[in-house]
Length: 429
Image 1 (cartoon, rainbow, N blue to C red):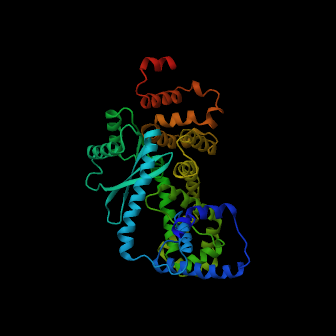
Image 2 (cartoon, one colour):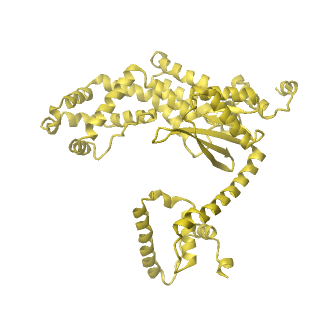
Image 3 (spheres, helix red, strand yellow):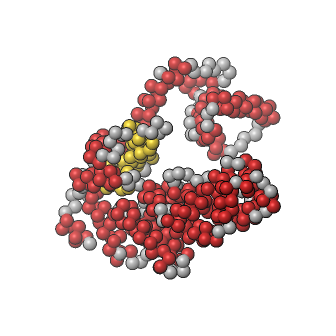
């Protein structure tokens, strides 16, 4: 009888969230029991080395509720049960979930995303995902180590995946902007005119930042900043000294490949400029063993060098606005497609304003931004997204007179409505 009348765990968890806390006569007893139970669950997390954020998964609370509904005497699943029958049932449930997504793909279309990454064995893997208003679904992962730089091979791989999803369902294909993938995008759009290829906006913005940090004086300042960071953090005693001077504030550790992190690293060093100068000119530093080291003397020279801090300020002025755009496109708060076009313009305006519109100081930076934007990132879909975004459409009374935006919109319409004759399209315009 319990199997038929026990409440659904997901429903119970949701109702508990909606109703909030409930009081009962044996609240004290329940509180003590809960503490013992939670401690057991926590101990399993620690013993198994399970990441603690696993408790935030939607499936975690229903699992706990199911255990409570079963009551005392629940026999834990065996290794075989987890490995064979339970896994098969979960596969069936996942396929059922995918069937609902496939219905959505056929109804409103979808985006195919190819996300390349390198594992610890230096294999180049590509994750294929499909996104629609219903959500993002992971499909498969492929080892592309042997042909990731071969545009034709990558084209065949993506083309086969588009056929697997259904050409009629796919509206857009998103890849990173590596040269091989740019070729793939052109081949896809040439063979399947109704498809739209878009480079990953986050990757393109990271490449903009990479180009900026290749400028000689900025690269030199970043190298010096990393040297300061590494010099402090590999010496525990010196690190403790720094924390005393910075009121326990840390310096951001740099990453090798993410140039947004390079900007954040320089920003954290700049925020601690006065504290670092105080530390490296203090008697405590002069009396320490580290002040006698050759690297320590070089770090002090950098800290006291006015041009080092001037270059950092310049780097932050030209890269900070782009990092803000990167946070927009790489976040999950809202779909960024309708905001990228405007965000890039605002970033350029912010850079110009930081130099009081003295074009001589930032013209080289604009050349870098425009090169990536025009050749890779700027696509008709961005213009269409800007046009269809109500917050921009209604705030810009001249939007229909902007040829670039309107042409981008019509370009997308032409691709998505293949039966629309060119003559009728001209009449609409």
